Amino acid sequence: MIVVGVDGSLPARAAVAWAAGDAFRRHQPLLLVHAVDRQPYQISKFPDPDRPDSLRRTGQRALNEAVALVHERQPSVEVTTVLEDGAPALVLRQQAKAAAEVVVGTRGLGGITGTLLGSVSDHVAGHAEAPVVVVHAKSRPVHGQVVVGVADTPECRPALAYAFEQAALRGSTLRAVHAWRRPVRAFGTELPHEMEEERAAREETVRACLRPFTQRYPDVSVVEDVRYADAVEALTRTSEEADLLIVGSHGRGVVSAALLGSVSKGVLHRAPCTVAVVRGAG
Ligand SMILES: Nc1ncnc2c1ncn2[C@@H]1O[C@H](COP(=O)(O)OP(=O)(O)OP(=O)(O)O)[C@@H](O)[C@H]1O
Ligand SMILES: [Mg+2]
Image (tube, rainbow, N blue to C red; front, side, top):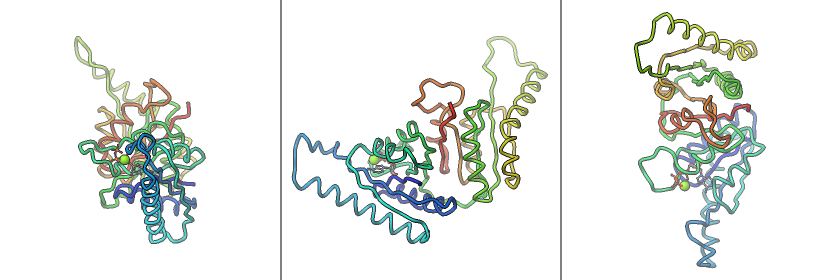
């Protein structure tokens, strides 16, 4: 099952359209979820007998429109809806517990501009167990390329599994990007042969990470892309020519199991394409 967060906004509509396509490709049913968020209205403090119903009605309307969009885009996809009271991020996480993935828009109905990501998407991307797809509303040409960020740790395996599956289903090229940097030295400069040795070692590590998947998906054409660069910068740049960018939820610097790593967070806020965040194995 694929879970989609619906709040009646244009970005959420884009999320529904993306999820309909993915549900079709993966032969999965869709569950459209709207959380009725009473918090901003402080209903408990100022009870208003009319307000709760009007909130539910608005939510139901958003869900009905989303169902219509799925029927229009992918008539064969099975679709159900849930309308539930609660904080949207918590309701989505709860509903997504047994899901194959959860899909949200970058933004919703909230008015704060200037940030690329709304608070619901931000929270869900950092906390959901399932892969979280944050869909960009802007329509772009199809590039036929999926990009995955490869961290050289075992936690990158679930992200690679997701990336290979997506590339195979879409018939896209998979570009596996590993960016690395050396810490800045206080004295002296890098010796070229040290740099070359490290580059070769990293290329070998990336190849070893990919090997089980290249064997399982012999039809997916893979481009190994190891660069001396900042990871967020490299992934953001590369994703200008990608349909989907996949990152793990964290790499080496695991501060807390519940938080996103700096690379995942960085690309979510900057990448120009749809981003999938896949939780690590650990
Ligand atoms: N009430 C909700 N029910 C279900 N999904 C929601 C709800 N609110 C938001 N979402 C999902 O989260 C996505 C991002 O919306 P979010 O609320 O994070 O952004 P925003 O409204 O622009 O910002 P904020 O709410 O932080 O002011 C939406 O596109 C939608 O997929
Ligand atoms: Mg919102």
